[in-house]
Image 1 (cartoon, rainbow, N blue to C red):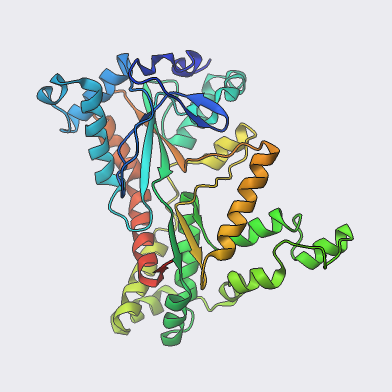
Image 2: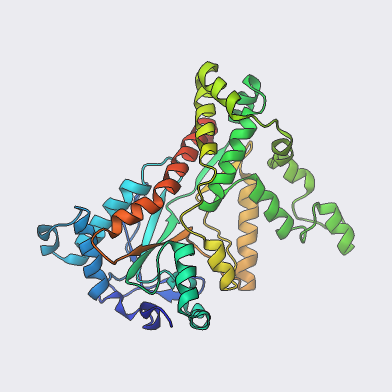
Length: 376
């Protein structure tokens, strides 16, 4: 059985401004909340209406974010402002990971109407499991969804910061960079692992080097216009990262007590991030995308990390996006879909608890990146 809000083709989203937002080729009505990072996000959608609007208002009231006087002038607008305030307190305030949100009436809406048949075939129990594991919310119960998207990409280089740390303590810079990439990847941080994968898939047909690609396809080196192995090695120090000495926790704590100011700060943050390595994101978009046999690539990163510069990363990203559009491949413009149950006045408190570990770890990564990165 389909979630009722999807089965009704999102007709319950209201009668405010008529607009739709397109994700993966499927149109759906939405309310764009004000950016809770830097800058403002233009409104381009409809507000919620009916029972979901009332349930969300009750949840906000239960959190002390909405009262009767706020709603007198217009409930949809009051709900929008209260929800944005709540989100800003949770996800806002970071330097590099800056987000905005789109409010939807169903957690499956961003995947498009093409998933309706797939959901119907899965059955209620599988839809329940899939939605809870993927978004933290049972799609068969009253809920709304937040499509989390990057507000603006943070573009940085890390060569100077990493090498300065390496000069003081061998391995510290590379260990810090590795932790940033691993923890930032689910939030669309495009680092050196991403760059190597994208070059191999976009230019080399999956081969480990451009020369092997040329040999396999009997191509001429003189006519090849893609990224070369030397280009990639100069822009992505993945080999140095892979060979770097691993610094154990005891040594990190010693550096945190005795090193220079920057080394102390880096070592402490790195130790804190590692202590949270068991913390997984409060969403599983790859799992959902694979269930619906959809790609999970995005041209909208939250952070782009370069070595001395980001020229190659920008080129690769543009080339990949252009090829995907030319081939008609669907691409998302959101990081995650976060389900928000509306089954009581404590809905927001339960969501805060579910997101707490994820946000806490991401804040540490944001702080660590600030210590070693230089804006481009």
